[in-house]
Image (cartoon, rainbow, N blue to C red; front, top):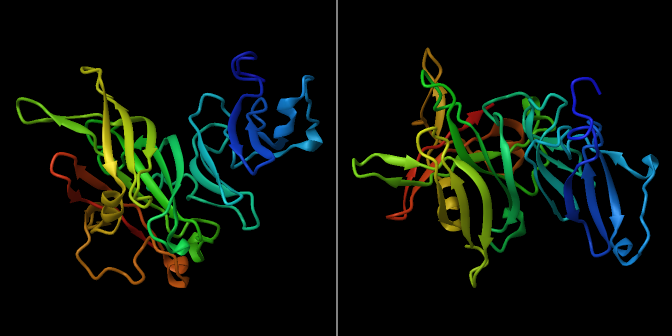
Length: 310
């Protein structure tokens, strides 16, 4: 393939490897920039000989696996459906969060819209229950991206994020056909104060570990972060309580207003139903991006949220 390294890029690099059920795995590979996926029986691991799949035994991997093997990917199979954070186009410009497989139609974030995702580097996808009602179940995705709301004269700014969608989201109507109607995202702040009072931020998320204790609805989320500064190289682990994350998503939000269309706090009446919740009306109108900050020292939320109303 022109412009690609035949050894480092033009092979079949496995980027998705998820248990599908008790007998099969769901596997996707880049396929030399032609991503393909297949169900693999776990029984093959008890056999000595090599197993080969024909092309007819595989299926299209678009929207499930990146074309480029160097792109960061995160995925999880939840109730027979694949949730995947990937770059979904040949040129790796379309950062997207998809749901595919299963009986429902494919839905995703808006294509080439930086207010949803911008140059995202995905780290982890995880289903988390907030209540005993399965209708409230969410799927969370953790990643680092360019922060559109923070960029200015200083140039590119990176933020770590957590986003979530409702498991029972079936997409919206009007501008949200085949798009998430409950997508929300929030900033994960990991910082330490310096002697001069200025905060040193660790803005590049590298890994996530979720520790479940006795309270299954309130796990601890451990994040491994590094700095994006050319001056200071360092790493840190920050811990977040799930209840603080949920509280932040339910707080106030920002929106774009004014002649220069800048982010500002929304002071009007919050739409009903609230953006980010599933209902007939939310599927008609809204998707919401939320930015929050958690002060780890005092466990007090400093909330700033971004919401787009359609």
